[in-house]
Image 1 (cartoon, rainbow, N blue to C red):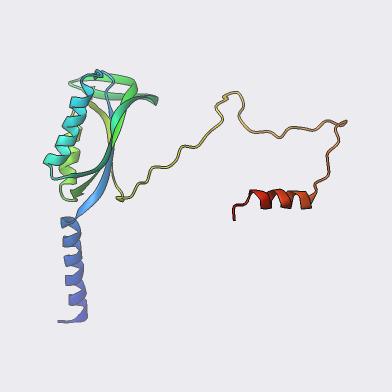
Image 2 (image 1 turned 135 degrees about the vertical axis):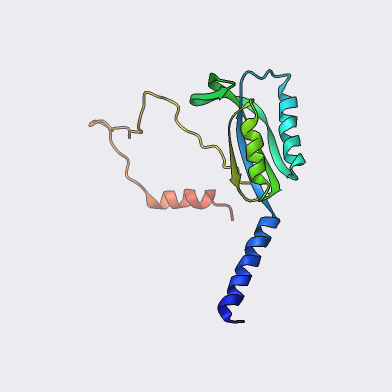
Length: 172
């Protein structure tokens, strides 16, 4: 066999093994707010059961909580257009064979309780970013430096004192 034929065979075998190995996925979803608090555990359990029935293995997940949406979303169910300003948001991280993931998408598309969902390939490690604190005053659009008045005196900067304070703060 020539060298090119060997490379072609190796590439085919690599592609075949990649599809057979389970990959890590994360699904984020929005559920309709028409679901009552009492029904939520059952709906949530049904989603987990769907993943497990398709051969998925759970890594981590979070129970859906009601959130306000950034904009009005629409979903048509049985020829009725529904508009939503709030929804239950939840997520699940799991292992699943790559060739079964399209089946999961088809089944989630048919679920009338799901407004939207997103399936992502990810890593097993925790990738949750810490929340950032933001200034919530909508009237103030940018930060401005405080202006010093003409009558105020500005104290000179003493570099030695600043160095001493920094050294005191640094843990050795």
